[in-house]
Length: 155
Image (cartoon, rainbow, N blue to C red; front, side):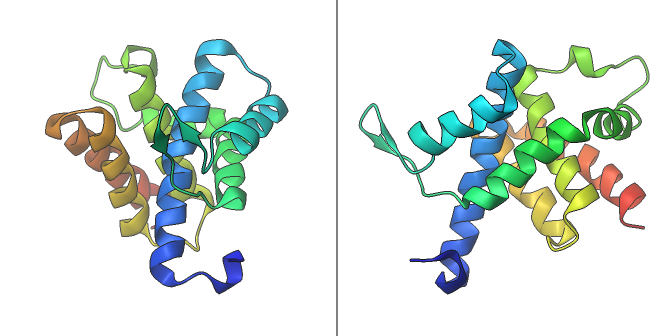
């Protein structure tokens, strides 16, 4: 089914899958220093919608995935400045869990650059991604930081 003919629910699931994959891709890039083009190709060929270890991964909206990953990479300094301004005194991005950092970067990118995505949707989607990796406390942290970013960039 082409992306233009997807049902709203199918498109929503495909975007949710793209967000989760974007966090995973950016984590891999952070840890392994994988070049962007190679990273995107690897995810296109072997991860998005693939079956890995008997688990079928949801089809992701590839263009959305590419935009989030590429956008975070291109605007990382700007994004990190926004995030740093939302952290408690004495905290730096270096102190954050590496997965948490990628969740926040992706969410901040969407709030900053994807006006087509409603603010509440972007925040709640990345809170959901946080739930895949962390407990409620960390998910609330994601909510608070991204809410602060949203108030700054979408005022």
